[in-house]
Image (tube, rainbow, N blue to C red; front, side):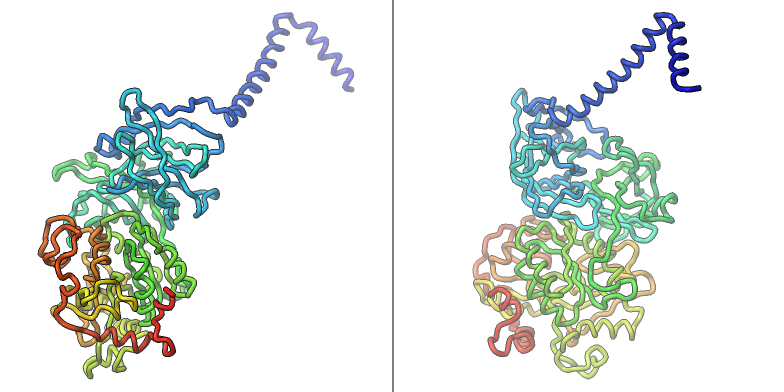
Length: 603
């Protein structure tokens, strides 16, 4: 049948139909087309014209994550911000806020639009105080890339002004668009699950608020891990739960759920928190869930070399706050002794430490900086670093940037540890290699510390601390450790740089005649006062607190205020010890200029 015959047939059918049927058919098709066109018009219009008012209208938000919200009145009251500028909003998302004593930390998802040089304004809205509404904008303190975390970016904002909410929002610095998101929760730094990482078929969760005793494994039956699936920020639900395997201090280890145990990488990016029994006789379903900003990450190797086939013999892990000026001397010296890999956990520094680390890395010192924003968490940070180093290192030294290994001299009985009189290049690496080959069950090497004082100085020594400070206390204090990360107890328990080992492994004490650590603990007052401001250790009392004032972790007789005591330059001086100074000058000074490597850099 040709096309003309088909058209005549359709016309006959249409004429035979009733007028009402014809009208129904006509209007149904037309209505569908008009409705669809109108929806398309509204969709396109919404991207061009803001429908909301340009004025902020604070709205009380009741979080659906009631178990995950802070108990503070300020934190439980938040605001919903309206778009007040251009439509070119940043396509990023704030996924967590943590309130610290001196700033608000925002955890942000990074995408391709983010640049390391991006600056942000922190936007604050008023609490609900009558009809008085408004906003305040402050430039952010810093913007940092957050390693392997699924969040990607950390933004530190000033504390909110009085009567303003801690639910901080962001916009590009001096930009017009507000960065909006649905999550309105603010958590306290003292009560939150803050990090999590895979370790084989388990997940290790780092959490504040458990209040477990230091240096002791706790009853893991009190705890469980809860895994959040689906749209967590909107639904606030945890789909899976596994029991804790171990619990100690701020670290809880749980098995992965069976559904993802064979492919642990599926756990990456999943929100996780810890459930704990509120009292001993509580039932399993009565677990109290802690607030959480933790997403499961997988620690990746960032050092140079093919770590699948070999490992570095000796690495170092440290946690620092504003120690950029001390890093070069410390790393240059210990690299000469054989350290091959450096993990620097940066605990909210605001000095030039990033620039110093980048310079050292370009000079082939194999240094990586790891952002660790969680204050008073040194022990947990060391546990985290031990997991990271396990993939790359045979031995790891946990020490501070004011601590220096020193080999004073050798005696005939110690030739197995060192074959020359004075320590030569790579001596420290040779020592751990000898221990590994001769005593495979030794997994920790402990070295005694000597504490040095200001040594009569009133200003920081220009040639560095190893040359400038030469007077110390007579009796040693404590000792620091070099450990095998593959031999650590599953709890990752550690206090004051000492880890618990798995059964079957043991530690050894190095004789002081073989090696010691010079701890430049009490430096000139200006340097010590900066240390006085804040300490990173979890279970060490801050200088400002009037607790344990006689402890070796404190300066005897200093008190609790950063006021220079009388005769500070001559305190802590019982024995003049120039051994390391002489060693450094003979091995590191330039023969033509007499300058040390860290002095050359400063010039």
